[in-house]
View 1 (cartoon, rainbow, N blue to C red):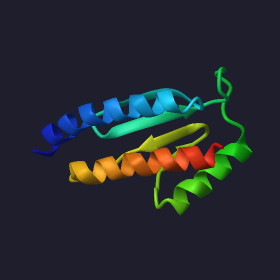
View 2: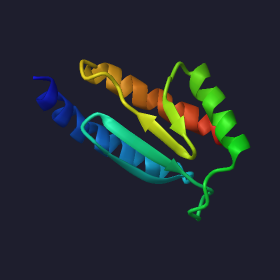
View 3: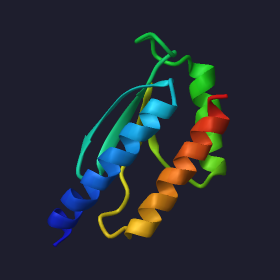
Length: 105
């Protein structure tokens, strides 16, 4: 039932990540399906990719919050395991929110 579980949790995750994007002006776009998502990080109000020093600071902050996320250019990928619990998923999104606040301040 992992495929069905990913679809169900993905709907919940979509809502949480959409809200997260509204709260963080550096997130220009959120896209994904199931439990595989990506954020496009840009200078607020533009489509210009976030500068490399800002991305490096964010990467360090994510590590400090024990969030091991794949990064490529100005994209940040969120891909939790398919067996993640709802509580763990909520904790991860809350940690991501805090890391974005700190890393992009």
